[in-house]
Amino acid sequence: MTTKPAAKPLDPRFSSGPCAKRPGWTLDALSDAALGISHRAKLGKAKLKEAIDRTAAILRVPADYKVGIVPASDTGAFEMAMWTMLGARGVDVLAWESFGDGWKTDILKQLKLTDVRSLNAPYGALPALGQVDFTRDVVFTWNGTTSGVRVPNGDWIAADREGLTFCDATSAAFAMDLPWDKLDVVTFSWQKVLGSEGQHGMLILSPRAVARLESYTPAWPLPKIFRMTKGGKLIDGIFKGETINTPSMLALEDYLDALKWAEQIGGLDALIARTEGNFAALADWVAKTLWVDFLATDADTRSPTSICLTIVDPWFQGLDAAGQAKVQKDLTGLLDAEGAALDIGAYRDAPAGLRIWGGATVERANIEALLPWLDWAWDQVKAKAA
Image (cartoon, rainbow, N blue to C red; front, side, top):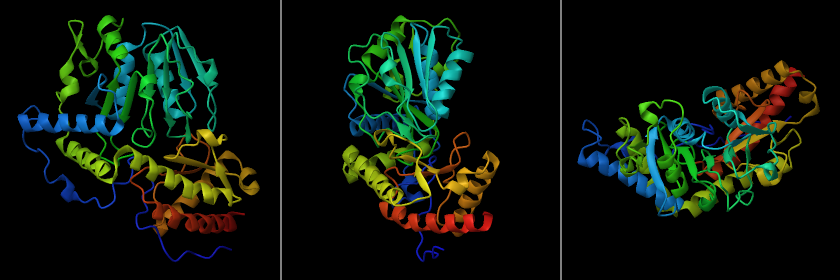
């Protein structure tokens, strides 16, 4: 039986969203928030524009791309893109976890498009990327937050594509190097890799995406918060800090604080290095641990942010789905009660297992301190149940 560890992670928050705050964060980081005044006043607009500019600089977004702050987190940003731009040509939608499957559902059942090809894969795998047809629009997630499976790179995306690529980059932006020349629509939220407060989404458009907006009118009515054009022209103010609806200036201040922290530690390269260091610590443990393995079967597709583990112990594998779910609940509940790890159970639609966030705001020392607790908790739960 594994001995109970003596030391705990200094921060046990390994949730995959909202994610851990940056190291050293306190409420004082929000003291300069532009509260009690209009977001359209000079100060409010300046802060919104600052967030856009800092985002573009850290992510190395090309100068001719548009970066905007839009309502309702990544979900709102991606829905906004789909409702305004899809339908101009056929669509290939890739789904290998719950969020990609959600986009597929909206395309088929809400937009009710008929010329749709669905390329699917089960949790732990990717669809056959070589089958994607880039004469069509392509909808996909870069990093499957609920499966721990990401696309390995952008090499599979055609440089001479005729359609647009719609990329949900939540859990990837600020942790992975995105190939902007292969991406036309990119969305993400504030509460993932930078650990900021959730509220708003980021929408990044290539010149090709802007051209689609200005040349195509969908057959369906658009809610006000989705409208990005007026008189056939892009409403450029959206991409200069003139938000469609009233933003939370408190959440904005928190995002600005996270962006400044990212700049101070060395920008995108440092964020990626911290993320990959966290993943490496977990990967070393998985390699020598018999009761778990990565849910992603291909090492090149394993996410370094939403790290999903499956329990491969033969006793566990012999349980039915209800039994496996109970073991997961007991395991994560014990870790929670001990203050060693909070919110690390697999996503509700995913196979029973663990999901540990390894994004840049997590300290590698906390990952390393967590690992012996995982072994101890597993021994405790198995001994009690077996």
